[in-house]
Image (cartoon, rainbow, N blue to C red; front, side, top):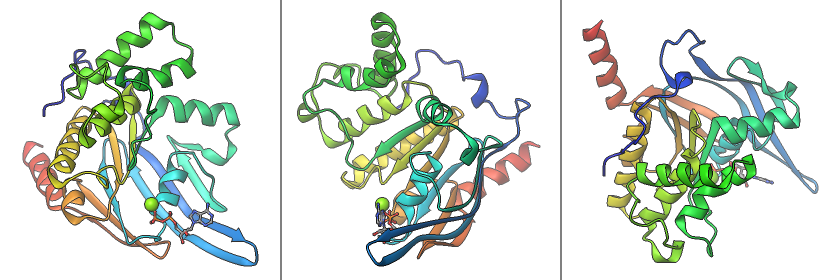
Length: 261
Ligand SMILES: Nc1ncnc2c1ncn2[C@@H]1O[C@H](COP(=O)(O)OP(=O)(O)O)[C@@H](O)[C@H]1O
Ligand SMILES: [Mg+2]
């Protein structure tokens, strides 16, 4: 499957070295504590993590290690109990609700393990939805939704409902929905968790192509062969970062860049 883009222009803000600060995400001493009755649960115990623009990074770790909690904080869906989060150089904890909503709607595209599609709506309508929230006129919404579906290779499935699509196709609809606002960051929490191996690899290939187009990709997975597609792998255990290394692919890429320079 090839990522097609009718409009091959890379959005200005996604281009590398366009004068903007290269650091996109800067987490400092992030802690998340859940209090459940008398029980105090430390989901994140001081996470420091910097992610640059246009990285392709996998976050790995066993179940319950804090991966989704971390993703939700990065995606501004949740706030840390303590610590600081700078996104694009701006302190997220100082943003008001409008600013946060704007970031979630315009900067970040979410992809989940369970697709989260509306069952009774066809692919086109599912992808159009974020644009309805944004208040775009109908004709423009349809055009953008069609383009997003085209870009993930689903141009001939636009009128199909989720139950008329395969798992991989459903996830592609979800990716099209995440892309329809042209976000700079794609956050995918176990996007291949409900897919067979081959379809999972196809979704990873699609994310790779998005990364090549300039998107920053952060994916959560507990599968090594899925993580291998990313250029950097961060392992977390018990709410703490255990390791943070370049993958073989990431190493090969930086060697290539060095030769080019
Ligand atoms: N809303 C919540 N309320 C209470 N505890 C939570 C909540 N969300 C997550 N947790 C707990 O925080 C820990 C980390 O969860 P999570 O980030 O979902 O892990 P992972 O995604 O790595 O499986 C787990 O022990 C989980 O039970
Ligand atoms: Mg999780």
